[in-house]
Length: 88
Image (cartoon, rainbow, N blue to C red; front, side, top):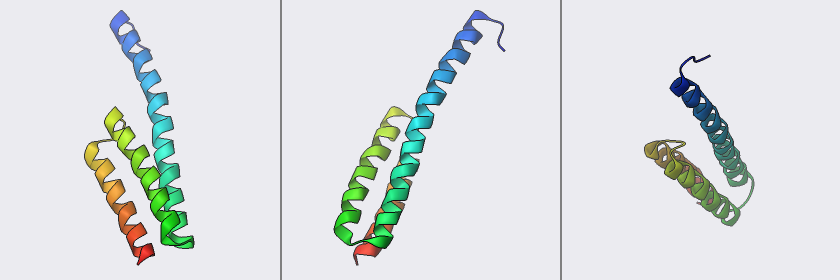
C-alpha cells in the first residue's frame, strides 16, 4: 500500500475508476454478444435495432474515456459487418 498522502489518494481514485470502467466494459461485452446472437438467429430488422443500441453504448464508453475512440470504431465496424451480412 502507498505511504504518501498523494499516493493514497491516487490509489483510492484508481479503485473508484476501475469499478466504474469495469461495469461499462461488461456492458459493452453484453451488447456485443446480443448483437451477434440476434444477427445469426433472426431477421435484419431486429439486428439493426440491436446494433443501434450497441453503437450508443460503445460510443458513450469511448466518450467517457473507458475505451479508446479507435477501439470503439473497430468494435462498431465489426458489428456492422456482421449485421450487414445477416441482412443480405
